[in-house]
Amino acid sequence: MDSGGYFLDITILMRLIILHHDYTDLRDKDAYFIYSLIPHWERRGIEVKHWTGTRDLPEGDAVLVHVDLSVVPSRFLKAALRYPLAFNSRMEDIRKSALPGRNLCLAASSAFPGAVVVKTELNHGGIPEKLFFQKRRLSLPLVESWDLFRASRLVEPLTYPVYGSVKVGSDFAASESPHGPDSQTLGVKGADFQMTHGVFLTR
Image (cartoon, rainbow, N blue to C red; front, side, top):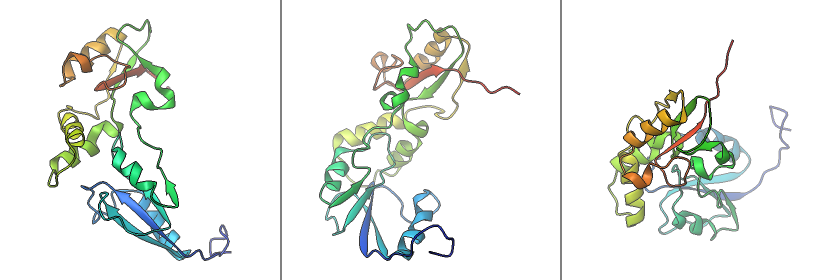
């Protein structure tokens, strides 16, 4: 057993590739929890190599897709399939409307009587997309650049306001949406905002 008494002391010699987005700053070691796991893997004989983008991929025994976007571009998922073992290779979409709890989303026409929470459709308020858009140094496929541009126009993404009714919440989301009427329908995949049941903790 190791010093903590939790793992068998088995040395596994393998090379793990952590695949990041082209714009990920690998120097920022505090940005993601995964960096704290790497020392544990290395002590067990796992060589970890970070890689940004999908060009000239290095050799490896396994790959972990670590692209910090709500929708992972398909080129990363296809790249992961080149390796014998791939983690997160099917984790393509984590937008609110794509998650198992999407049935909690409300449409503007929903007859829900209680309070509602308005959140961005994108994960974490679309902040990763906004940050990547600011870094646009390299040429990306047009569809990827467009998605980052759309996210960059979301306003105050982490406010998460609570409203007393579906109508008021819907009006807010419609007024805040920067992408036209087609993006203002709540509870529909591809919208800028999602409206969900309000859940409150009381003392």
